Length: 237
Image (cartoon, rainbow, N blue to C red; front, side):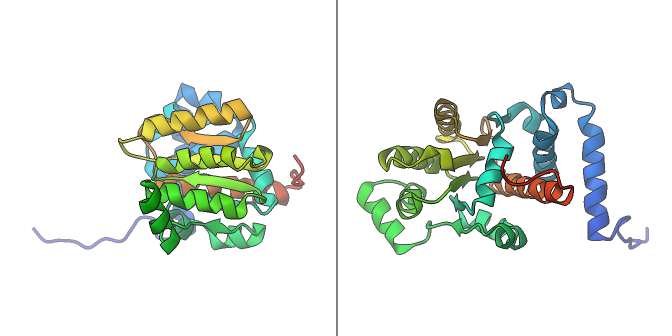
């Protein structure tokens, strides 16, 4: 039998993206769970599904604190530092959005002092890196974005309390993935954010990834851009 070469049915990047989100929107309507979320939350959920293709896992495990997305947007518009656990998130974030809203991405995971502190205190490098990041940037608005290392969450919470940081200028996006410390760390983050009324988006259970963390931030940025275009958002809400 002769092999016949083919070309993609859709071969333009923008067209592929539009078609993908149209398919997601239609399929989401078949899940009763999707009706529990507001428009902004569904935009984030659509991005997460686009990244993972997992409808049920996303819908059943995603968690938003009240008004998490507009509160995250307010921090982004206030030039918040985005403190991340791995450089994969830093590399994945759109430079256009970062430049537009003047958000610096902070990742100290590979800094020499991180290796030294981790060895000295017998912690992971992720733990040591976020401790240092908070000490350096404690007076700035901060968004903690975690897609890999659960110890990052423990370090962030404990250091925020130890350094007496103003928690009204803090938010969390928590998507660590794996088996050890993962479920426990997310539960710790959820309880912390609920107790102190901190905006948080997290994926409960073992499910998560750095790419999903990036997708959540991109969806949040895009909503700012869309609202600004439509003259519906002024950055104060």
